[in-house]
Length: 546
Image (cartoon, rainbow, N blue to C red):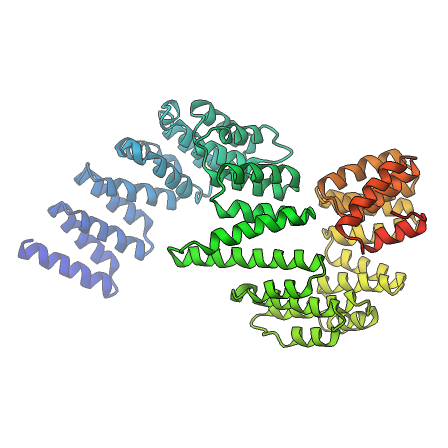
C-alpha cells in the first residue's frame, strides 16, 4: 500500500466514523478501485449499508464486480443487496452466474441459501418466478434437479401457490427419485386437500438409502394429522430396521401409551432410556435435546405405573426428572399421585410450594390445584377458586371454560350455559365452547337441533378432532339417526380409541341390535380405563355387566 493510498483509506475511515459516512464511503470506494482490493470494496459496501444507503451499497458492489469480475464475493453482495432492495427482477443473471460458478458438489447447499434469501422478498410470486428462470438449467440436470425443483417449490409455497409447489415436488422426484428435497417439500404439503403429496414421501421412503430422520418426520406429520395407527406402523418398521436409533423408540412408546398398549409402551420407552443413557452428548444443544427426551420418557413411564396403581413406582420415575423446564410439570404429577392416594391437602401444598418464575408457571400451578380438586370431586371448592380468579381477570377464556365445566358437575346448568356463551362472545373461534354446550344439550336430550348446530360449528373449526366427532355422533343418535351416528362414531373411535368414545359407540351398537360387538367395544374401553365415568354410567344405565 502506497502512502497516498494509506492516507486515503485512513481519511475514509475517519470520515465514516466521524459523522460523514458519505465522504468516507467515497474515499474508501476510490481506494478500492485503485488498489483492486476485495476487502476495501467490502468495506465500502458495509459503510453504505450502515448509513442505510442501499443504492450506494449496490453501486459499490457493482463497481467491485466490474473491477474484479472473477470475485464471487462481489456477486454475492450484489445479489443480497438487490433482494434487500426488493429489486428481484434484476437478480436473474447474477443468480445464474453464481450458480454456474458454484462447484456441483456445493450446489445443494446453495439451493438452500437461495430459498432462504428469496423467501424474504416482498413480492413472493415474483421471487418464485425469478428463481425458476435462474434455475432452468439446473432443473434439467439429473444431478441437481431434485434440489432445484424443491427450491422452486418452497418459494411457490411461500407465495401461497400450493398447487405449484406440489407440481415442483412431483417434477423434482421424477428427475431424481433419491433426492430428499422434493420429499421434504411434499411432507410440508401433506394435507387431505393435497392427496398427491403423501405418495411422494412414501416413494422416497421406499428407497433403502432414505434417511431415517425423514421417516421420523413423516411419522410426526401423521401424528399431527391424528393418524396414530399409520404413525405407529411407520415407527415400528423403523425400530426394526434401525434399532440403534433412540428417537423412534420414544415416539413409538408415546403412541403406544396413548393407545393404552401399556406393555409395548413400557418396552419401547425402556429401550429409549437405555440407548440415550449410553450416549455422550457432543454439544449443549444435543444435551438439551437428550434431557428433554429423557424427561418425556420418565413422565410416560410414570403414567404407565400410575395406570397400574403402582404409585410408588410412578413417583420414582418422576423423581428422576431434573430438567428445569420440566420440573414444575413433574412435581404437579407427583401432587396428583398424592391426591389419588387420599392425601389431597399434602398434594395442594406441594403445588403451592412450587416456584413461580414466570406468569405461565403461576397459571400452570393454579390450574393444577383446580384439577386436584376436580379429581377429588370437590367441585364447589374448584368452582370458588375459578370464580375468584375470573373476577380478577374476566376476559380470561381458559378460566371461563373451566368454570363452566365445573358448573356442569355441580348441576348448575344455566350457569354453565351462561359461561359458555360468554366464552363464545369473547372468542368466536373457540371450538371447545361450541362442542361443550352442544354436547351438554345432546346428553340431556334437550334442544337437540340447536345442539347439532353448535357441534357442527365446532366440527368446522376443528374437523380432525375425534372428540368433537364423538359429540356429533352422539347428537345424531339422540336425534334418532342411528346409522349416521354409528358411521361417525366408528370413524372417531378408529382415530382415537378413547373410553368415552367407546362408551358412546357401544351404546349405538347396542341400540342397533349389534350387542356382541357393543360388548366387545365396551370391554376394550374398560381395559383402557375401567373408571371412566361415561363408560360406567352407560353400563349401569343399560344394566350391562362385562
